Image (cartoon, rainbow, N blue to C red; front, side):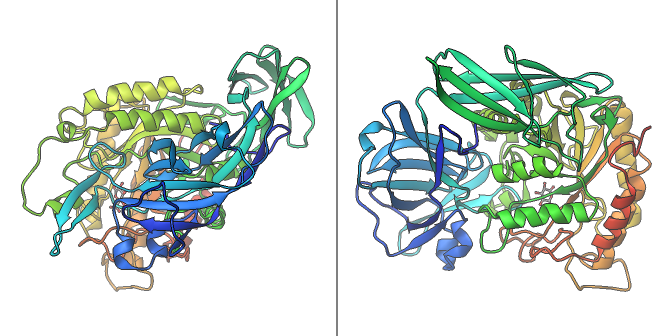
Amino acid sequence: MLYPINTKTRTVQSLNGVWRFKQGSHNPQVALNKDEVMVVPSSFNDVVVDKEKRSYIGDSWYEIDCLLPKVGSQEEVVLRFGSVTHHATVYVDGVVLGKHRGGFTPFECVIPAEFYREDSIRLTVCVNNELNYTTLPVGNYVEEVQEDGTVRKKVLENFDFYNYAGIHRNVHLYTRPKNHIRDIVITSQLSDDLSEAHVEVAVESVAAVDAVRIQIFDEERQLVGELENGHLTLKHPRLWHVLDAYLYTAHVELWMAGELLDSYTESFGIRSIHVKNGQFFINHKPFYFKGFGKHEDTYINGRGLNEAANLMDLNLLKEIGANSFRTSHYPYSEEMMRLADRMGIVVIDEVPAVGLFQQFSAALDLLNDGEKQGNTWELMQTSVAHEQVIDELIMRDKNHPSVVMWVVANEPASHEAGARAYFKPLIERMRETDPQHRPVTLVNIMMATPDKDEVMDLVDVISLNRYYGWYVHHGDLVKGEQGLRAELNHWQALYPDKPILITEYGADTLPGLQSLWDIPYTEGYQVDYYDMHHRVFDTIPNVVGEQVWNFADFETNVMLIRVKGNHKGLFSRNREPKQVVREFKKRWKAIPNYHYKSK
Ligand code: GCB
């Protein structure tokens, strides 16, 4: 899906700002009163202040009046949402215009011509934040009868981050021709010696046109060449390299009867990705991932788009010597992806498939009756949602050079019967849908050890979240080291041709807390914990990278094991460094991006 930009044939205006707001039941035929307002984009949760409203589950209503731009008879006005978490129903003057399920991908509604008029239209969005066993992420949904007889809906996260909700990303209104560029797909093949790139650009228009013109420009805006039948061979292309990004732009035009119909400019990078002999190659060189699992999570904004925080995070990432992050546990904003392209930061792109594990501790807390439910793969009815998020993520992110791999799910119960049947078609779908055929991975949970796991042979890279010395052998780094080493050796022996990526390892740490001894939660323990892991990683040939859990502390639901959120960050929630950052900086600055493990 194309990002909204101004071109000769398209104009974009922002609808961000202060909208009218109400939680609970509402008739969209009637205008909302001005008693309450909400900022778009943001999560409403921390902004509302009131405790009940913060944790409210159900419908929240957002409304503004807006003037539509004037358009000609061959143009249309489109309303575009970067994301609404988790489900949206969009109304104009009380009439349903569209619906979207899923909280992390963009969607659009074309405003019908009958609403194109001089005075303003009333735009209403019903935002619903319910999660259950059919949605992604997965939530434990219950209805509780209160003392006064009313019913209160509750969702207990089946995952470890706060269920922030609202209109989370930009809202735009834009104009485009009715017969417009619907999509642009850019792929490139590099020759073995990297001296030539065969670039292919496929353009999809709504209806047939006389001509499609595609020109490639370099960063100095110099014309590099024009495509013939969608193809161009570039001699000595400047590659998109890790931390040394170079972006070309494809300038696409649709022509009809000698007139320009539509134009759009899409940037792209030329680079290659492949997996071979237990290594992960970028531009034909074995790459070592140094970086983080992250969250979109900041004070006040919650999960709402915070572009200053995004830039600061990527600057900190570079500062500490890292080169990559994973969009744990959902697709991040388009703005973040564009920033990563620009800065040369490698991204592992994840769909919001988290919580596919019936025995996640949060679920047990909520049910609180000790009763075990059936098998995860009988309980979950998420296949339809899963296919949708795969399709929408790839449709949105396929052209980003920063994206080097897709994640089909984080920590599903891949050791339970039924996992293989569930994941096989989804992994195949991911591979087939991606025009660049990037590698696909699944992020494996601790319990799905090599002897129990049912799915890792299906993926290209063995991604592991491991917590030796934390959830396993808590506080005992000697036993932790033995356990970690033994397990990694087991994976290495089982899949000698697959790279192993450590996608999570971490220890909760409270800044300022110190001890003479190895005591969990202290800054000293965090330092020793990581030292131990790095010692082990360096001895396993197929370990092609380490992504720390987490970049920064983040908000979670209230749980026995959470002290006002998750504190495994290397940085505090406010992005202040913990003691361990100095150690990481030394290690990561000494590890090259390429050829760390193999020559
Ligand atoms: C995990 C999850 C992540 C949690 C983390 C933790 O394995 O993937 O979402 O936050 O562990 O800190 O427990």
